[in-house]
Length: 133
Image (cartoon, rainbow, N blue to C red; front, top):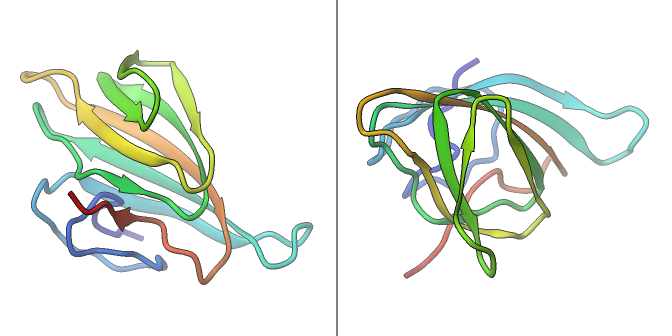
């Protein structure tokens, strides 16, 4: 299943399985979207985010909890109130539900980057909510 960007401008996803595109045009693939039988009212999502060299996402927040793992390249991430950190292949970070993700970008202008994102949220919660300037 493919879903365009977790990070899209006009996009406040209530994900299931569609393909779309947006300004930054990073590629987002929903690998899994499953209700959690042991946690009623919650679902888990596994999402792959592919950044081309130099790509970045719009500032956003997630209704659900997110954990990200760098599969390839280097990704710079910054959550409101924290310093921007560049994560390399094999490194990971955690974002509590509602965190404002101010920076999410490929740290390289010449090489691609790829993230694996795991989220837990309610079926009616949005994967991405664009932040207003």
